[in-house]
Amino acid sequence: MAVEVSHAPLKGKLVVRNLGLVLSGDLDRPILDADTIIAIDGRITAIGKAGDLDLDGAASTIDAKGSPVSPGLIDSHCHPVFGDWTPRQNQLGWIEMGVNGGVTTLVSAGEVHLPGRPKDAEGVEALAIVAQRCFQNFRPAGAKVIAGAPVPELDFARDVYAKIKASGIRHIGEIGLGTVAKGSDARKVVDWCRELGLESIMHTGGPSIAGSHFVSREDVLEAQPDVVSHINGGPTSISHACVRALCEQAQGSLEVVHNGNERSALVALEACRAHGRLKDLLIGTDAPAGSGVQPNGIIRMVTLMASLGGLPAEQAICLASGNIARKRHLDGGLIAIGQPADFVFMDKPQHSAGKDLLEAISFGDIPGIGMVVIDGIVRTGRSRSTPPAHTAPVVV
Ligand SMILES: [Zn+2]
Image 1 (cartoon, rainbow, N blue to C red):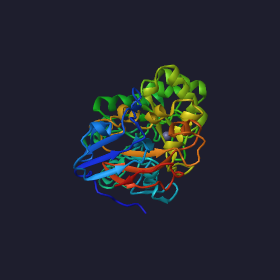
Image 2 (cartoon, rainbow, N blue to C red; image 1 turned 120 degrees about the horizontal axis):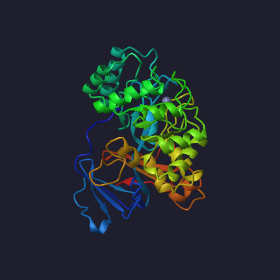
Image 3 (cartoon, helix red, strand yellow; image 1 turned 90 degrees about the vertical axis):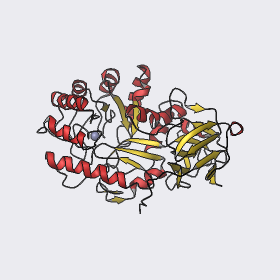
Image 4 (cartoon, rainbow, N blue to C red; image 1 turned 45 degrees about the vertical axis):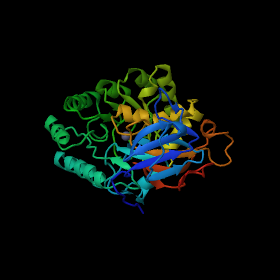
């Protein structure tokens, strides 16, 4: 069962020492020359070599025992409803298990799996506000769930979006999950959202089990949303030629998801590299979905990008962390001064053919997670969803 935990970050000083590798989440500099991280009141204040840092007065010390660390991973695309339950698979504890898979922040693309979900403006607004407020107060295993993503319908006028914005909602649900799906209709919604300061995201590809409409390359290019949601389909993909065209011509971020077409995800990676758009590429799960919930969905996508996609593993991690934080204006996703102390201690899984974490990922092995820390607080020890990590940290 999900455990509700305090919002408050760790009070005082956290010292993390004996790190074997520090992955930053930043594509410009994915590996940092450091073995120690210090955080105060849940925010990173120093990163470097132990000999150069003040390690005294720690309220809490983690000895990484040589384990690598990455920033908390972000799921750019999920569909929560209420609590740590999904009606799609009637499953409990899926968010907590996502934390076991290294995810510390999840972004809702719409609370669409709610049975009988409303489609009138009043109901859609109310649902979004309830979802957002509930997840502000409820953090399964410490996860930060950014929920409240109202799905656009054709009869919503501009004032509906203005009210949504005024209520504290930051982004809409996927255009295309409701009746707005054609390019010209979508363009109007995207323009209103842009004027109002709401982030817009748009379903791409064939209909999903949640009842979405087909959204084509032409629809996306006419609308130009802030995020091209699951460019590799959710789960049915547009053609590879259309994926390539969007990677060249769509102006927003380009997202690939675990519950999509894996071959199309690799086509998108290749096209983003060819067009110098790797910083625009984001990873999500689109879970829960027809194929279930996947606690390891994000690290499986990272591994796909690195192994079959040939992207260096330290860069693949950035697609599920710093890239999403930057493009979607979120806190976290980076190991950098001022960022929240959200850490995933991961290493090669035991008996991997890879000599270290990065080689194991490049060989296609999903990493073992030894500990997850959110806001400076230890949320899991050895993961309940990954194979055992070669090294795992201990709290001293
Ligand atoms: Zn979708």
